Amino acid sequence: MIPSQPGGDRGALEDGPVVRVLVAMSGGVDSSVAAALVAEAGHEVVGVTMKLWGGPSDQGCCSVADVDDARRVADRLGIEHHVFNFADDFEAKVVTPYVEAHARGETPNPCIECNRHLKFDRLTTRAAALGFDAVATGHHARVTVGSDGVCRLRRGVDGAKDQSYVLYMLGREALAGLLLPVGELTKAEVRRRAAALGLRTADKPDSQDVCFIQSRSGRAGFLAERLPLRPGTVVDAAGSVLGTVPAVQLVTIGQRRGLGGAGGTEPRYVLDVDVEGATVTVGDRRQLAVRDQPLRDLDWTSGPVASSHEAPLEAQVSAHGRAQPAVVVPAPGSALGARGPAVLRWIEPQRRVAAGQAVVLYRGDVVVGGALAA
Image (cartoon, rainbow, N blue to C red):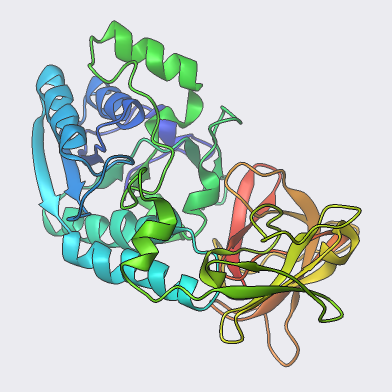
């Protein structure tokens, strides 16, 4: 655990004893500057790049060029650099579940599962075994310590780059051993610092896509190699046939385009995906809106947080979506326990969320928990 003063910001690397820090370096500018800031603070720093995807890749953060960029940045900073091969874990914990989720008609977020199983499980376990006191990453988020001594995850200063959404699964223990040095910086400030240090990643574009999916073949090409894609029939809520789609597993809730000619006087949106029945149900915007959203695998960062219409939480359903007020209530016959079912009740009706999509809960800028849509 990293010593920290109550109310202090982990990302600020406040004065304290020198600790051994393992910095996850993806080859991008954020993790490069994270490593530089930890080193500048006087800590003992070692950089590591995780070898995750063993197949072809032309985008994301798993290419040979990314490993080379991370190594050269480490050389520039005068720190050690290593590569950890976690390809088997990545296949088992991220890629295979991604394919299986699509086979069920769900909409998974592989970056969240990579954080859950690789960066903040496999990597942190390896770091502890090697005698490191902390792990640092280049995520735009913050860890602060309250007057009660509890570590809390908060949004990054740069709202446009905030990545707290993909870190919602981190509990107290994980946060206590985590440094997020760039969380207090805007992206522009990160790039300026990288340029001032002469880092080769200063102008490198951000990764925007899933690392194991190639741009030329896309999601459809990747999934077609791993499961039989089924054509589907598009129907309205009354069951009338409106068109077809080439692969029902590629359709997601709320989708508007690519619905095989399912036209009408107003836009139609996907309301339901039935892979087994090879059927996609569509409707208008009003039919897409719901008051209650079932949740599964609910995680609370520091224990259940009470919410009511007078004091709602805010729920965010995509990485850069706008959080909306909501109340979390127990699912029928259950309690709000860890990893259990629950119901998200919107204060105002919102678009239904695709099964498998992450729903992250905030109170102000603090992440209090999250779950997957059921």
